[in-house]
Length: 233
Image (cartoon, rainbow, N blue to C red; front, side, top):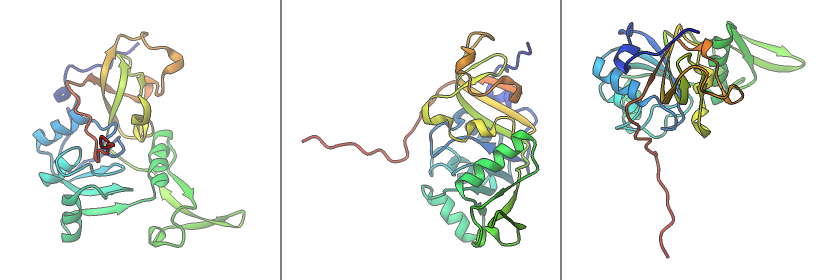
């Protein structure tokens, strides 16, 4: 069995350079690859295209890359938590492609499965469909959406083994499984890294065949975007 572990986040990002396209798992700040994002900031890679559900917040997640002007384009479905994102988009500094959330997920999954494109009814008759091929199936109109093409997919999982088999925890699964294997190279950071064979096969969410590199993350802040608690009576 192939051992896919690398010693550190630094080693996991060998080959990363300017002008690349990255997929990053996560929903809000849940299940984001915190260690990888921090290392991308240190590497100072520029002009990158990020495919991610959202852009984090101003001082955390992908917001850190926006803060340092490292992202030239965001392909997302939700961008409402980041003031810097809004400023860069309205000023023309940042190119933004907004997609229906299901379309974003399926374009990732199509890339993972090796399909060149999908047809979806989402967005037909709106600006999302402008300039795209449309076609009727059983009397209903659909929009042709191409599978994503990315250089790296950066994933966060709860547990993983040396062979790259992964288990996600709760809603941290979100976009992570669809992005595993959807790029040329998939890099995964995990909270717990175990020997091959240590995971229960019936609990594995993504098999190691979709993973090229895996490492144990150093620490996780797991911040919440908007913390709402009940006041004491």
